[in-house]
Every structure is written in structure tokens, then in C-alpha cells.
Image (cartoon, rainbow, N blue to C red; front, side):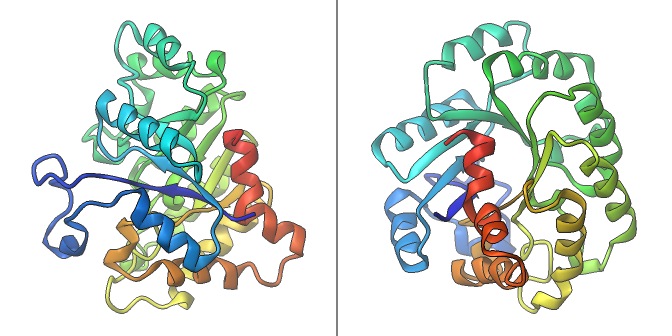
Length: 275
């Protein structure tokens, strides 16, 4: 079974989705379950995890509603303000939503490099284990130092790093990112998504061989049991198509055993998110 561990839905609004700049104009439109279902049928994908793109509880409710109406959306990663004083009550309120598996904050957009380590955010994260929620870590490489300290604080919390921490593939930035990712991977409660990679390379001229060294670091550091395939659809469409994204990963892991390939392409996501 192939599970896409990372994709998004939205009804496009220029202000809400202002992060979609001119270079990404191709995705300035609605992307909803019927659009993705057709893509999955063409690419033999069985299900997915829908991840928040907007930082509102309305976004969380929107994704839960879509998941309730579409069986192939097997899990949801929502957003709540984990810094708020009554976050425990908010988590309790959502706990009855069985398709809601975890939470994410767009930490990459925070000016504070140490956002993850601030006391109010750390306090919010401390409640997640109580409800068996996962947490998706979305950061840029310059935030990996804080990420390492962050995961050390929560040895039993299930974490996954989105988009291999968005290394600057276009600029061939590698060593600093690689050192910290290897350190983070020593913490066995941390997983990593092979996702969002082609959009970190040159949109128009990327080649698999440019991305391969980054994937090799991730696979060697996290191993076949803590890596999962994700498409980052529809964001990936600014640099390619779904088939290219899937092939990038399946070609890379083609020399692994059938069991290991199945783990990366679906079973690890199923286990991590309890789909």
C-alpha cells in the first residue's frame, strides 16, 4: 500500500495564501480532494495524510471535514496555537476526531531562530504525548540547531521532520545541514519525510542526481524504518508533476529490499500516524 505522507488542500485566497508568490503562480487556484483523487488513481497511490497550510483552527476543521467525506484521506495534521494558555483544553476538544493524528506550526516562517525552544511553545508540546498526537517539524536549515535541542527535550514524543528540513539544494548548501540532520537522527523518536525536495532545487532545471546526495544522508541517518515518502502536492507542481516526485523517491530506493521499499512508501507513515 502506498501512502502519501504529506499533501495539502486549499480554497485559494490571495491574502491567506500570500506565500504563493509570482514564481509559484501555477498553484494560485483551488486544490481539493477530487483533484488529488484523480492524481492518485494515475499514480497508484492508496491514501494520504493531509497537512495544514494555514495557521487557524478553521484550517484544522476544514481538513477534518474533508477527511470525513473522503476515505483516501486517512489522517490529518492540523494547527492549533500550542503557545496558548489553554492549549490542553483545545487538544482535549479535538481528541474525539479520530482522523486528526497530529499538529504542525509553520516554524520556518518564524523570525525567531529559537522559536521551538521558547517556554510557551515547549509547554504546549508537552501535552501532545498525553493525547498520543504526533508533531511535524517544519524548519529551514538555520533552525536545525534549535531543532536538535528541541527533540532532546521530548524523548518519547513522536516527531517527523518535513521536507528533509528544506536544504538549499539550488545553492548546493550541504555540509552544515547534513551534520545537524545526522545528529537529530540519533534520536529514535524522530522520523523524516522524503518530500518537498524538488522545490528546494531550481524549479526549471533540477535533476535527480542533484537531490540524491541529500536523500542518501537521510536514508543513512534515519534508516528504512524512519523515512517516509511524501509528495508535498500541490506545492510540488511549481517544479514538476506528481509522477516525477514519486519516481524521484522510488528510483532512489529501488535497490533496497521489497520490505524496505514498502516501509518507506507507506508502512512507516501508517505506523507513525496510526492510520
